[in-house]
Every structure is written in structure tokens, then in C-alpha cells.
Image (tube, rainbow, N blue to C red; front, side, top):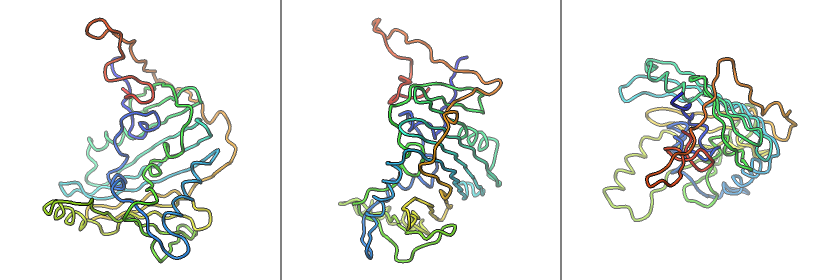
Length: 294
């Protein structure tokens, strides 16, 4: 066996590997963040309370659905739906599965193959993490860090903004998400200081693509994150996190990987000598946390 299973994009941050963002729409959040006051509570305070729910949870269960729709540069429409199921127990037990489906004229064979690489499972029994890629019928084991955060498993949580950066606003009108009253925190892009006039012009042109700035819907009663949405001239993104359970007991079997029939394990080759005879790691970097998953 000459090549390992390709790392799905959702696996990298758990194991410290280089990764591509889960979606083009959610990735825009990295530039949109902040703090602004409204009424008795402000956006910063709400975000802090929300973050505490996830950082202090001893166990967590969630089903998360991300729906993206838009058009390719060639004008072909597509809709991609990704479903994540997550089980977590502190400090480092977890099981995450990801499935994705697509529809529309843009769904070529190449597009379908790309979706296949976004699907898979990763388990941690507290000693090692096992990543399984169904498209290749292969799995690979790596050491797992002693502490794993829920935010490393829920892609959207890694992009939740800090509480003191410009551009954040608590909208005056709350929303209702599946019967739950929710704060609406909007993230408006704020240009960096001292931009050159020509760069500022391009920046302002880019803002015109937004029909709705990114928004976080946060439960007004328990401060859980319920939903994320964004609308641009080329597409929409919606992330639904309404199925979440905090603190419930989970069986140890939930974190045990059993290889499916026909699945094969990939084992990295032993380290070889570097030029000059010095011992070194496998080409492409180590497979320990902080390195690259080959």
C-alpha cells in the first residue's frame, strides 16, 4: 500500500494537521469579528457566556447540518448539505462522523469526488485517534492530544469571534430558531487601518457582495449557539446546531472504532536517514499532533 487515506478537511484541527476550511461561506468569518453594546447585555458578554458553555462541558452530543447553495464561476447551480454527528466526553474522548450530499447542474463527477473526501469518521478512545475514510476503505491511527476541546470538533465554534474586536453588533430585534428565542449577533467587515486608497476601493467593492452579513443566533435562555447564516450575491450558507445535549452520560463503546469489512489500516513507513545519515521523520512531516497527516 503506497498512499495513506487522504485527510478529510474536518480531521485536521483535531490532530493538529494542516487543513482546508470546511466551507467557502463559513471561512469568511475569519475577517468578521467584534464588540458593540445594546440594551442590558452586549454582544461581547453574550459571546463569553456562549463560549463558557462549550469550554466547560464535560460531555456533548450534537447533530449539525450545514447547507450551502450558490453557483460556480461557470454559472451552474449547486446545493451541498453536510451533516455532522458528534459525541464528546472530557478530556479527549470523541467520535465525529461527517456525510455530505450535493445536487444541481454543477454536480459533475469531479465535484462528487470532492464531496467524497469530505466524508468520514474519526474516533478517539483517549489513547489514539483513528480516522476512517470510506471512499478509500482505509483508516489510520495517530496519537491523540491529552486535551481536546469541543471547538476542535465543531467547525463553526473555532470561528466564533472574540469579544472586543470592531464590527460586532447585537441587533435590536431578536429571532426565533425552532421555537427558541435567540439573540442575533451580526459580524460586519471592518477595514484594517491605514489602507491605501486603491485597496480601500477594492475592499468597499467586495462588501457589495453581501446581502446579509454573517449572523450568529444564540439562545436567550441558555446561551447555546443555535444557528449561523450568511447571504451573498453568489450563494447562501446556513448552519443548524439546534440538536445539542450537554452533560449527558455516554457509553465507552461510543468512542471505540471497529474496522468495517474490507477496510485496511495504513501504517506510516519507518523513519529513514536524511542526507548525511542523520535520522529523520517520514517525508512530508511527522504524524504526531502538530505535524501533517499524510
